[in-house]
Length: 460
Length: 105
Image 1 (cartoon, rainbow over the protein chains, first blue to last red):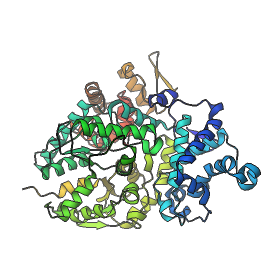
Image 2: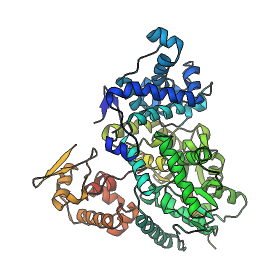
Image 3: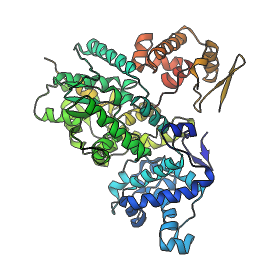
Image 4: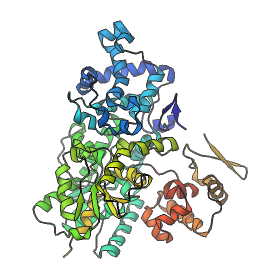
């Protein structure tokens, strides 16, 4: 069971697994010294981080707004305190008062214990940015978690799950390790399923040159989320799009955002742009993946190594625009069940998808009930930033982290008769909520949003 | 590294109990995994699921979509959970000697 001095920790990648993603683990005796060297480098580059280090007054506003703290009641999971785990080191080495007065001003020497503490707490944070949203100083504590995880990665400490995802991306271009024959076989199966269930002919072109649209699905859709994959195919077929799925980047996620914003994140961006270039695509449309859409929409322009000549949109943006223009014929009665919407944090607090998701939801369902709070104020599912660890200890922690979400879903009453739908249009949210709706006995099925849209389409 | 010994052969497992080298799999290995998963006996339906997973993996180097597994074996997802209490990925795939699925699954 992964635990260090009473702190839960995810299973970590072996040195060999780290090397597969081009990271060389630092020997333990050198870790403290290297941590300071890397921290120094990073603080000079990221003003957002320095603002977080210098400005917090510990007002406590973030505490009750963090689902991790609400679920665990561990004081180190209060966002201000979590940031303090790095701040005490920052203060010791990079401020005058810290160098002179040390512990008297809350500064602390770096040690392996501190680094292990980072590993425990920066991987309990979901990077959901709800604390940033309520901070009166506008401190984005997520940036601190980003940097904590970056330092850990450079030291050679990365969860096995994240490193495996990085390795699979290097190898085949998606997180689940799907090679092209598996992609094609699953898509053919989806075509058959659509014919059986909806009676329409839908093809899923793969690697089709000169496509107007390349669609970037989450690879988890190929294993766990059939209706999301079918939904995208049905939507593009319905609008008569010239589209395809690129087998070289069958992945909407970019875990680089979550553990390595240098090599891994940039590598994934360039892999994407290479695929768009090779297929001579005109536009890139993103599938249902929260962090991945943030990584694409907000980071591609600055991480690309070339002018980005492809418009980058989300499938929800595309669908909402067509609904507003009256170009989709929809029958909301096809989704008669009570539905509530879990807003993926990155969609609403980073990418402005709030209104478009509701435009779709209102057009395709008859009994849509909002959670409270919702939209930009929504709480995380508890799996955000890929903390989908499933060893027994961390799995128990995931149940705690989803407690707030469970309370919210229950309060809507959608699961009262056992036939409710919890719409969670993001692969991490889905992977977290599939087991969590059972653990909390919520009486709902988890679906994506494009799933519901496809069911409501009225075919000519 | 954890290890499972079957018929005198040491089989290396990862931290989650999945086989490192799928080529070492045989039916006795599946039975040994069944013990550790609390499955008392592997019946015909267990083998149907295990063999389908193995055949699919041999051909495509990946586990099938869960929905396809259910259809091709005529087992509902609920029934698969009855057969393999840890579920299709963590239970059935483990017994079939497949690597642990990665990503948002």
